[in-house]
Image 1: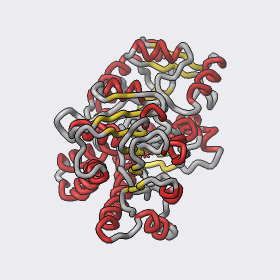
Image 2: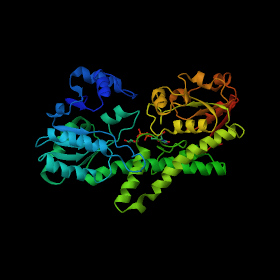
Image 3: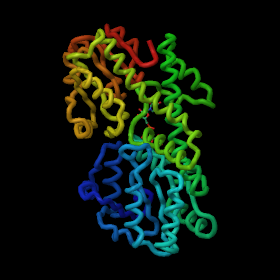
Length: 419
Ligand code: UDX
């Protein structure tokens, strides 16, 4: 927002995070973010605070807090959205616009708008979902694929649209498509998009299961069906499946919400999407055991990648970390490496062994497993690694390696959905 020319005050209850940001450091790994932060702080248009009253003068308030999955349920934990909203309310004035960015169960905006009507008359709520991908957050924010405004009917809605158009003037001038709609649709767009993406991944992973029993090749299959532009090749990469802080919890929260709305049958297919996804992790462990002659006991396994995807240090619901933990629980001696996610991985699973250098991780390994397709792992030279491992066995959990190159260098190469 500061890059777009606005004056921005960012508030959070986490003092440490705010201190790090105010010092110009990004609190997580995200390509391009440190540069953007430095550039924006230097303009004087961006500041950070833990004091909610510092936002009182703003015209537009964005609520961007998380909605993680509840501990023992599928539903989303709404405590952070509700707390941010309640904290903000005393500082609103007639004409203020509150824009919800968080991914929420449909019906939340309607509930919050009613609360706003009681406690901050004259302020307007809009729902403005966020579609950025980790690893591409800067690009996706400055050049989004589309924008959605969910607004109330009447004059309040029209005023809010005009204000958001001003906020996003530069983005709209770029030709970014805009959909203006009601609250319910705007909230559904986000979960529908993520459910579709998750379904696409699980579809190709189901095909991978069939490829495994028929001898077919899921990569060639994805290429061939992807040439049909009604299907498209994107998000058809078979492998370990989806993880992260969005797709898994969003499809579960969506199922939970559909149940509450009396439409539980509608989304039962997402249960299958979820179980195909988790089955891939189990299959990966089975493949490892097969490669190691039927037993994981005391076998040395090098795991390349801990984050849920490349170019992120996020380990939330990371398929790689999950598989690494399973292998260890089943008796293997596992060493995990990752270019950026080691600190987060250690905090999440302190029992695994972590090393910073790839060579150190694979030294004397009986089996090497590529579980997150960071560029540097995809570019590894199998001839060089051949000299330091104990057994030339590689499992490609992301169908990212050049199979012929590894086999030519004398490795046993196996992957999900390919032979
Ligand atoms: C996702 C949505 O893409 C984004 O629009 C939304 O705002 C937030 O959720 P993100 O969680 O950053 O973004 O990751 P994404 O790039 O969607 O990948 C999710 C997972 O799917 C990763 O674990 C990735 O490895 C996996 N994936 C992706 C596949 O297994 N195969 C694919 O073909 C694509």
